[in-house]
Amino acid sequence: MEVPFDISYVFEYAVKLLPYIRISLLIVAGSLIVGLGVGFLAALPRLYRIPVLQSLSKLYASFFRGTPILIQLFLFYYGLPEVLKLQGIDLSRVPVLVFVIATYGLNVGAYISEGIRSAVTSVDRGQIEAAYAVGMNGLQAFRRIVLPQALAIAIPIFANVTIGTLKDTSLAFTLGVMELTSKARSLGLLAQHFMEAYIGLAIIYLMISLLLERAFQFIERRMLRHEQPISSSKQARSFKLWQKRRPAPDASLNKGGQ
Image 1 (cartoon, rainbow, N blue to C red):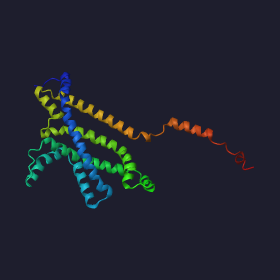
Image 2: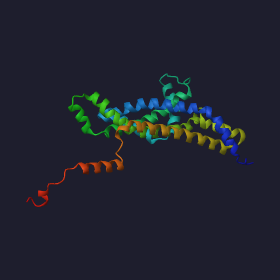
Image 3: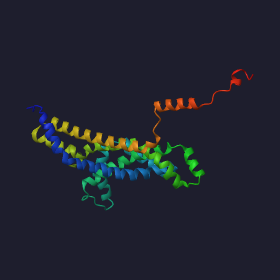
Image 4: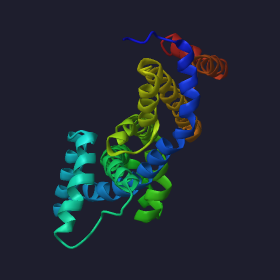
């Protein structure tokens, strides 16, 4: 028999799901840490065009960006231990959360490597040459000129990757991780109020995503605070001031030089 919809369960389930936010956020944080390290290492061969490593970096990015995260989870959790077992390495006692974070981290790293590469290459080459002209070496030019601008450009990309990873953590329940989605599914099974459980889950994901979005927007504004465009009103005032200070044209020129 179909259970009627009850709005009170939405708020009840949302409250019960709150303690499990930490598991989802732990997966996101761990994945970002791993992804930043892997993504930076994967971006370097393509930035410096190292022949063999450049091809491997492209292959890595293509695989993790071109295959579903669910398949990657299954391959790493079920397939990798079987392959390593042939080499005498036993991973049976490794916690499932380690496999989840490692898989998400490699997936995130593929997107971050592309973001780093596009952000660094978008910096004007003339600024780098100017840095060399004033006596900076390669490391100083990268740290003082390229890196600040590249970080500002990469913030929106990093924000999208973070929010996307948060939503993708809902698939971790397929490996038995008791995170938000897994707990919502369990709550729905207990009282057969699946709709209410998933609505409460959607509200929590939405609230976290909005908070993350606001946080990244604040960081982006802080990093670009010295590059804010001049408003139209300021431009108009500046133009009027320039007109007042501009010297009057020579009368002789207006009369054909007579």
